[in-house]
Length: 188
Image (spheres, rainbow, N blue to C red):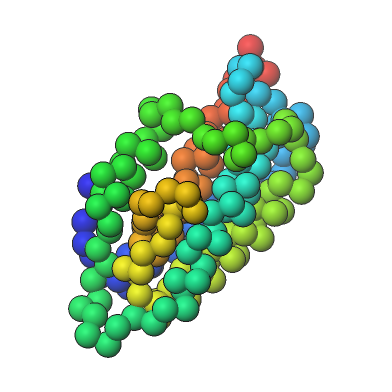
């Protein structure tokens, strides 16, 4: 369950987790050949590259929904505590559980098994995400942001940042499982 916590501690945790995701990509996935990155464990399951294509698409699609909130300064009377929104407390644990089979919107589904620029684009977005987390130290993390233009429910800025880091973790783990399945298949 998401609990209120000191803002600086919250942001430091997000930076650490985001750095860990980047490190895995740089040390494990960048060195892979096209065969390993494009192999799908089962029909309909995503390859390593498709996991990151999805992350790239999701970031491009959702990041405009909260970037303006980065420029809203924290109020002087803030107590320095980040409080997750009701929506995040209700759904994040279930949404980012690898055992939950959540479906993505078709617009964020990968279209090809492999694209040579995928990991480079993802790493560029990670630099942007890291800068956003750093910038948010001066912002009001409680600023509410729309999830989608046509949906009236909202996350706050801090929830959005956690969403992206947790979403990256979920699909980085999925990509590691796809790679492990490839390696296991090669052994058998």
